Image (cartoon, rainbow, N blue to C red; front, side, top):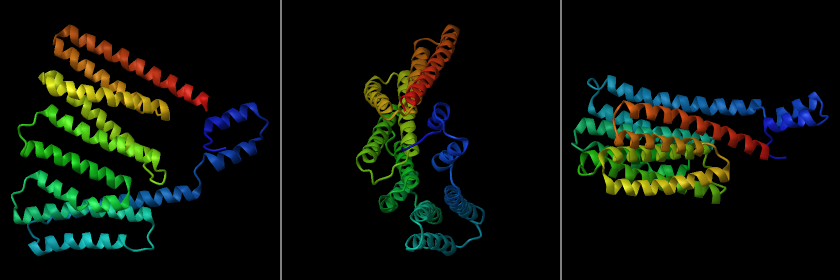
Length: 318
């Protein structure tokens, strides 16, 4: 029997003649984390924490000693760190997960290197140029590593580049136009990740990665539609609403198919926020505030009740 859950063992305990020793053995083999699993988790967690603190320490080191360091030392130290971390990745005896964690730290150091270079020579480049260069120069590492945290950093850099580009270069872009572009970009990445995870079993895409992408897509959609309602940008608003409706429908369908309650939490919450924005747009007085408060209380209660009912239904189906 695969994927034995704690609830399954509780049912067996109530409706079978298994002894306490047998139940304990089943729990130990199928539910409880073993000593090796805890050691593996702590090893990766401490390595990730150490590399994160190391990168943060390097950034604060340059920030604190900036005036005292010569140009050669600033660039030389940063380049040496990038080369050293990249060299560690090439060592064959290092575990693949540790190698990917180190490569993620090296990718962060690439951003530090560009920041140091820009501060020394005052290139006059806009902020989006910095993030664009950072994104381009770690692209190969991202593709080779196939590591979810590094992909998350990469997606964050792409979004940051687009936001800064709209603020510094494409100043005629409206807020809702930017949200429409970000929504389309992150939706494509999310759907691509889900399709790859479904059709290519060899590629391991963790649920937390797709959940973060889903939360980003829903957040961008919610913010963009709310701003469009307030600003009356009808053309872009209608398009964003149409695309959001399609993506939300796909999200609900995917949630039913995979029995994932996460989509049944974020999508209805987004709809509640959008309806509240619409109510505030229609009128702005004490009665509307009272109506919105009552609507939020009733709707959130309804969402929570449905989530609990769905989880009970799915547990019974198991």
